[in-house]
Length: 288
Ligand SMILES: [Zn+2]
Figure 1 (tube, protein in one colour):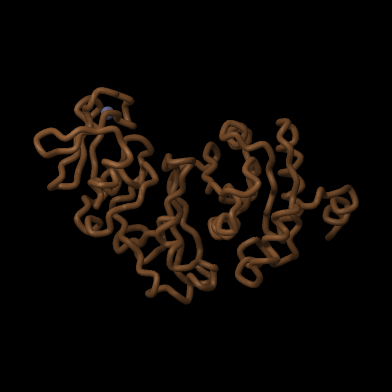
Figure 2 (figure 1 turned 180 degrees about the horizontal axis):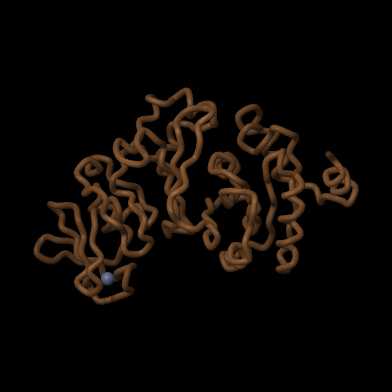
């Protein structure tokens, strides 16, 4: 039940049967002003007037959503903090898209773990929706067709200043940067922290964020067809005094495709990234 999730994760008290949290994550008020209606499953802060459904609150705070309540959530409420709309989305049934998920190395428990969702209506109708977080702050979501050759749909929001990531327990201070969501999930499923560039570029803001998050080393994992860009990234990151190495993937390969074929092989590649040398670089740069 969502009420138990709230009670066990937040400082709270019960007033007239409603749950009141001490701290409002939207305005920072720390004096029991954010109230949750137990019957309606919605919240309201009496100070900043942030409001929404319980599931939106749970999603924003990176907590498990309440599936039973999902259908009752209000549609299209914009969140105060990030301006992202998540409430219109539904829970996705793994078995309906088993073939697609299997082709990406996604298992049933990953649906919950990575918060996969589905849209029945609107712009993202029949698409997979994946919310992306920096820590527990929602910063972006991606939408994608649920077919092997499907495409991605960008939301109307700049990606330059965000760096969503998944935390892993291995090589604690290393961040494995990759292009896409499935690469990041594959790497994270093997236990490593992975950051999602949503492309092949990195901005100054993103590099500074990586340092701020506390990572001490970056391992670049661009797709095999972007080797030159991988070298460019390494050099750009090194300029900010952040140690950076890369893993060279074969043409047409990427972390996700290797994960699907041979997890152990990807694990070995990630565990011991080779320091790329000048010879590697010249080979890549000279290729026509
Ligand atoms: Zn507030």
